[in-house]
Length: 284
Image: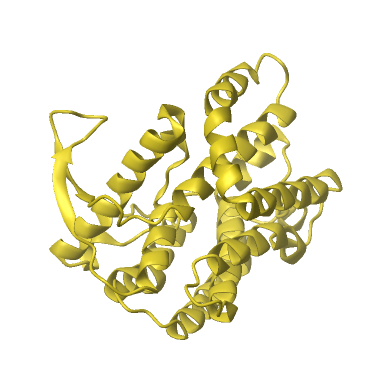
């Protein structure tokens, strides 16, 4: 995903932040073991949130252990004990990586696409393994990229329509976290967070897309307006509305554990991420 859905460290208790990092490190370790070294490039804190959400809807404890970091053997990190980390988020990260590499190869010329082709070659076996185990994930990302490419090819300028593929993708992905088949609140949470992610990502890329003449749904709407005023008056209200709806959907979930960490992300972390993009504030 995009790396915007993350916790705000200053308002987490130490033990909560340590556990949050343990989930991230466990995802990194699990991706490397199951799908290969290249798979680690797909990891972002968005998948940490997805893993926490998946675990939070189920009871039990989540013991951790200290082991050496694979990327830095001189450092010891906390990891979830074997069997505690859900498999779906790591499979989703692997499938999304492969799908994104295919998309980048299609967008770039031969020379610029060489690096992506090399990464795709190394990630192909991991992708096949993840897609075989979770074919529904493979279909979710294929549908997402097809819809996204279609609206970009017709230069869609309506932000509501442009955000729809990402919103639907996250809605379907969050629904897979349900332990009992009840998905309405999860689907709504995924939908509004997906919409928020797309709007924020389009905002972050706006100046660069204007300079490089690349697709961005906000380009035609911006016109001659001052970009900073445009972001504050046009974009910020849409982002805040998404956060408000995410908070409402979150309250409908039957959270059994990690509610403080997840609540930190929903109630504080999302706003801090958007402030970092719109107001150029440094996220702690």
